[in-house]
Length: 313
Ligand SMILES: C[S@@+](CC[C@H](N)C(=O)[O-])C[C@H]1O[C@@H](n2cnc3c(N)ncnc32)[C@H](O)[C@@H]1O
Image 1 (tube, helix red, strand yellow):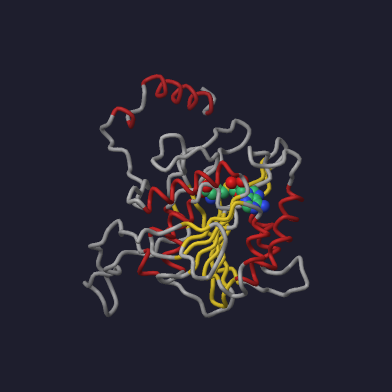
Image 2 (image 1 turned 30 degrees about the horizontal axis):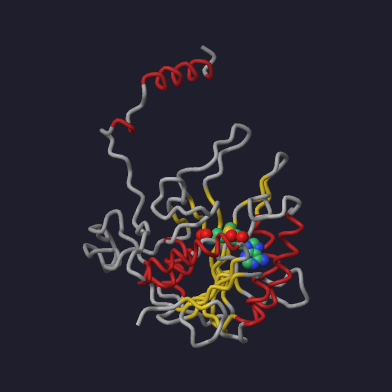
């Protein structure tokens, strides 16, 4: 029988997409029912789906208003992964993960340290807006917290290929033996994964999707098969798609009907066997002899002129 997407949560559901405010969905979830929460919330930057008057104070208030329910629905040993970037204005950039961190570890409430930060993962990508007044932004952050000290971490599910798998120890009792893990290396806390721009195979009409590879890696590492994954701000349904591909249950909410419909269509495509994703494989280095990798002559001239200027010539 084909999998079905329900629009109201029931613990027997494999897949639930709720079209509405996440605070309503959260109220409908039982205590300690969710294994992993992954989301990328609105940054309050005037995107199409945001009130243009929203600012960093709104971001903080929105997080404070849902945090108690997020904490309540998470199982002991469960994880929360919050993917955020920067609030960028003419004057300055504000790291949103600082605000999330304060709230989630209980600094801004009477609860003391309800969650424990395990990693501050830097997600780096090659493309984005070019700035002429500061260094162009090419990373965002994923904060990974656990509820308690006993938590699921399946490192072997997410190992990545070593650059030099044949490397051997050169001293000590293991001298001469292969030094790496046969399954690959720990992916580290810096993840180089292309962001979803116009030509990306996963691109939909949603203005700011994250790639499936991000929630997929987190789901594989932090849950077991059939675990329940929640995304309160699911947008185009990327986390739901990753959960489905990896045999986990999913519940998510999206307030904008247009995005909710995109999410539903994406997941139904996957249910029907049509999965459009970029596999989580290392970003290829351009071959040195391809035309795009060669330095254009005018760039070479401009660079040598710049060098001359800088050396006072
Ligand atoms: C940054 S986007 C998430 C994108 C998503 N990770 C993806 O890959 O498509 C945040 C989403 O949260 C939705 N949203 C904003 N406020 C919401 C609320 N109170 N409840 C549910 N969804 C909300 C927005 O419409 C937007 O689609």
